[in-house]
Image (cartoon, rainbow, N blue to C red; front, top):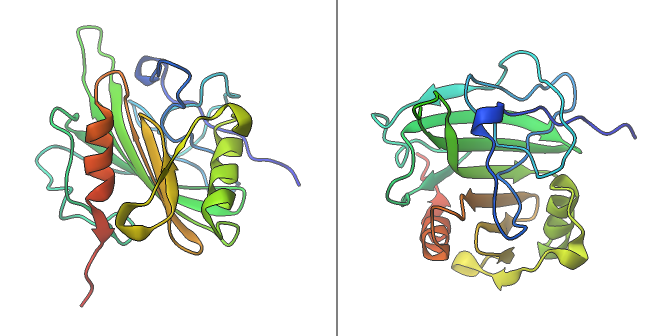
Length: 208
């Protein structure tokens, strides 16, 4: 099977994460579903990953701090707690990789004095039949981030009883078979406590 290419984020908005931690969720697309690229950042590339430019802006929605993103569902989920200081530019993306759909929301700070934007946080809802348990999710994300699973040091993490893993800057768990959530913060600016508070605040949106 031909693998999809990962579109590049803008250079100024790429996030360097210390201590070998993975960068924000990497966008990867299977034509004809193209990941969106704004004038700022897409989820951010995994360190050392392949780069390519994505055309178009399919599946993109941009908001600001004036929007109450805590009341706006992300693919059926609400994020009730945001870290203090997270950036005001909020962008939603829709894309697909290896038959798993991604619906992500990215928070950015900027522009700085050079006009650059910085990715502060990314949250994504993943849906795919291959995501059947904690280990299959871990394997999928290791492949997605282009990491060696043996070198990815993770701690079991079970928000609201759902099986997952975390490190100091990323947390992910299986909400139900076929549905997973990934939270990523800039580990240089935010703490593990910020990560856990944000992750634990994510709940299914009420319907009806």
